[in-house]
Image (cartoon, rainbow, N blue to C red):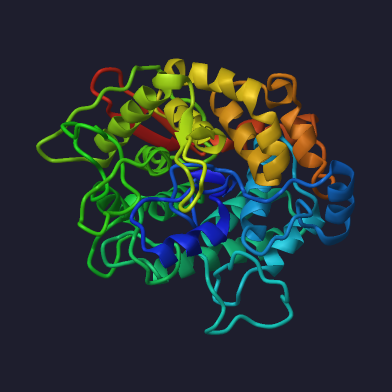
Length: 436
């Protein structure tokens, strides 16, 4: 689930145009692995990263993070920034929250970006299920410390309602309303719903199907030679499922009842692949973790295939999806298997994050948190400081007693525990619970 805006809506559109069943690289930092373009590659927002000073100045005046063209990832990168800042103990500036609220359509949906928010959304406005899901989750995370909690709460409920209204009969979602369900979109939305207190397993379509029912249709069996335990983005033109690392990381999180702001599971366990007579989403998620662990073990990171039409046919390191995989493995209790990739990210992600922008920094921060690694000392980088510099200055953490209680503080660094998960060693039985 590329957090960098899954390559952005542009990639998603490209996937539709070329009619490919394989997922394109999604901006991990800006977008989950989740949204527009199907991909096994980047999970960062594909926006060129601006100079920190200019970005900060721009953010201070508009409320938007980053100075690159927001057409395809404005809502995505803003939402990811919020989630990462909350995970680091900061509350986004009111100006930034207002910017995101202003992007919402009256029906509760979000587009990738609306340049003219004074003009109401109409039938021609392209809604984005991924942007909507991430915005709903981000707004829910900042509600308590926002200037107008009731307004934010209303926006979250409206977004949840819209997502339900466009759920496909199979229980899943596509990137655009009415489009065929895909693993990335379905996983991102399921995780966002769980983070806002809605049980994905009870979120049924008109046919009585849940997001988990849809995800199981994308799961490859452990007997598959090339992709044992993985998830596909969508079936290809012949109906065959092809292993997709981006989709697998996203579906692993969703299957565990978690979102992109997960913490590591305990006790730790090495993931294994096991086919059950009656498949369950919990088992499928652990099978997905097994696939990711093996994929990372090959080189210490994931790789991205050449872009369609490119003359350069060499595979490149996929920083965004590697971060997604680290997050998913930690959530599954496989922190040991994720550690080499985490160390690779600490050494090799700086240039990628600078080029990709806010969502990329956010993605790395969340991956660090999931493994209980300090994002302020990520290799030689202070990821939190770098992210904060790309937008309006957030409110600093309050260390007073009143602000650190579980019930009152919006600055609880570990609010992201959200859906806590205990993974039973050996049997992989998952018990989820929410931390207030």
